[in-house]
Length: 443
Length: 125
Image 1: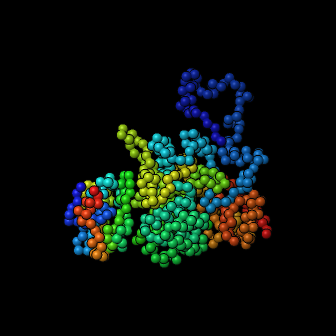
Image 2: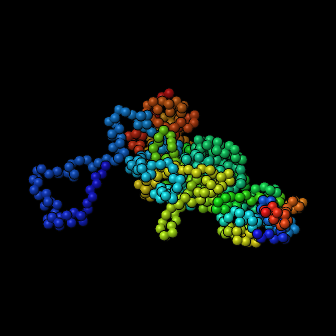
Image 3: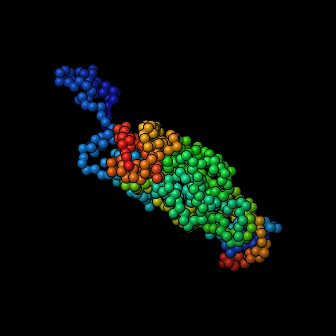
């Protein structure tokens, strides 16, 4: 951790002037030279990062839970990113510590303001016009996007890429069980959606196409090609993406997508044994009357002072009811707050930097793993950001089971497919340990 | 309450102005005053085939939402696009500027089921 001294050259000058001496050296001239510290501040090391400190302190402890003991290369929507302590501190302040937007929302200007900031950040990340105050998680956000598409287009066909997270697809199917919807899974080729085959589908009666990028195997899809297919039709393009990866990808808005949904856990939220998570949802302006959940808007009061209000909230909650697109009236306020603090800490430069760090680590790991006997990069693809799929001659299930016992967590994708994810928390040493484990693995 | 005698009415508080097989549809003065300020109209699609009494859209007022029912069977021809930016036209001028849609009537027999202004007046008394 870096030290913090609230003093600059100007302040120093003022102090010295007040004392009527010319330099700091003169102030301490009474201390004999042989008693003085030679190197820097007391000769201490230059310090370590908060994450390195955590790792060090944890290494001194015997009380280890599963994850602290194991190195996490698991991903697929929920990632082991570093969560700075300041997020826990700010979000646990009593003013903020509620999961709900209050019932008299306008009384709580602070809450509304951070939700407004959250929405602005999600709009900027996704390149779209309007974001809601968040939904339950990425999977239900996708289901809401499909539901919106059904009612907006009055079409019944939902086309979901075979490379969308299969758990999300399950949630969509459950959610739409009693709606008139035909869900079709799109063909894939070499780890991405097969655009050639999709091009041959008649788009006239399509409500939406759902494309995830980076997709479930970790590879980058081209949203633009799919928005082009829908150009002269009513159908909407729903883009699914991890927000951290999104900071270095061409945005859904620039790709002419209509809706963005994502899982916001990676924005400053803990793994917490699988939940709660944070649903991200933003849309093009023309869909605003169908936006599920709540929206906070900025306005001016009778004295022309800036203030925040819940916009359009009565529609879903009080007057539309059975006619509403969605009856979701709540949001993940606390986790959205954490996401706001996280994104503010990282800033516009920090988020892409973080994504590049994950990219570099994943690419390094891919170099190492591709050289191993019995392991091959899936379809030899390198167009991934923080996770990628590996084909192995071993049984993926047995390998994952065994690795867990040995202290490595990663994902079993299919019979002979495994997937590794890399966050900034994974050191070169961690990756080398994983490679060594895989190298020596024998069924 | 303004109830012109040259147009027909429905029990769902809509008016229908029929010229040959083209019907112009809106809501009555009584309906707009009951709903209050209308802030959004959710239209059906142009070209959509509709059945008599089918819900084909909604009118959103400040405190409630009402269905738009198709007064007759047929096909939606035209929507009043002025209502997209000025839905209050329905309140201000329900029988002229506040018309909602035009439709091609497929079964003129159904016109007999519509009410005259005097019948409608009895209904809302």
